[in-house]
Length: 79
Image (cartoon, rainbow, N blue to C red; front, side, top):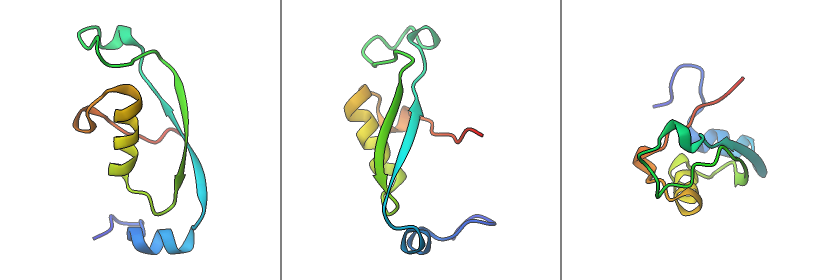
C-alpha cells in the first residue's frame, strides 16, 4: 500500500514515463573515517533513471559506483 498522498509505484510509473536525472550527494570521507574501502569523496553524482526503476535498482547502481552495500545506504530528498 502507498503511503498517504503517494501513488502506488505502477500508477506513478504509468503517469510519468521517461528518463529523469537523480542527483546523489555522497558524504565526505571525514564523516565515516572507519570506512576506507568505500568511495566517500563528497562528490555529487548525477544518474539517469527511468520512472519505473526501483529504489533497490538505484541502490545497486550506487553500490557498483561507491562500493557501499545497499543496506548501508540512506536515500533522502532535499528541498
